Length: 279
View 1: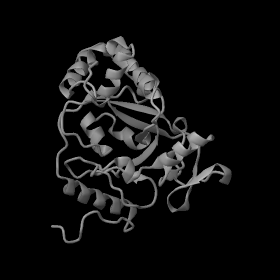
View 2: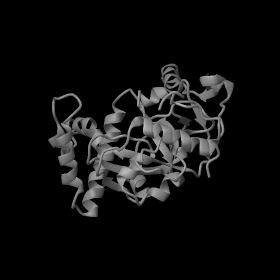
View 3: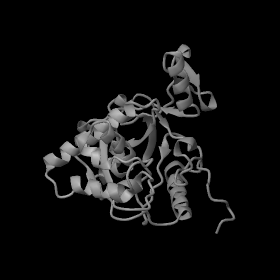
């Protein structure tokens, strides 16, 4: 069970975030400045150590990372190497993933995904920028684990314009991620499907299902990027698959539905993204 509360660190080791809340900082001048900038404006969320989180990794979105890994000696990804910024084309990446993941043995798939995660760790470890990882609680996600990958992405508010996209679920204990926080609009980088207005507790993902969903919106959290291994995938029950369609419905439809569900869950503390005069 999760226990939501603000986390306050000792004064000598804190940086002040939004609303005067105290956030942990990293020792060392350069590291402290960097972490301060990463966590500025965030509300820290305290979870019980027994809680697990799940991150949905879009393998198609790793084309730039895997292309770089091919240039750095990962032989399996050398077919993706290109001088074009951002890596190979979307079509080339989709074909590459299909060749390695569809109609292959379990051992072949596990071996390939192990290489993917190792390459991701190596390439990310050679950059100075630690990105934020978006997660939800495993206990909230688990009832939907047997549904299609399209439904997984709907649940966490990820809009997709093309398909297929190969999605793997990574489950790990929250303590291994360190600090977790409620995401901010800056973290979403202009994503219109992110509900950035304040209300109590963790963020809540905008469910992008076309039908009116019955489940409460899933919690939405971020943490600093960590190293992943194949045990995180196995921890999810080896959840993996391709999407079969693009996101349905308009932005306004999804916003209205999301606000209604939030009010049912949290009451009238929910501000509206939709102007009262909108039809």
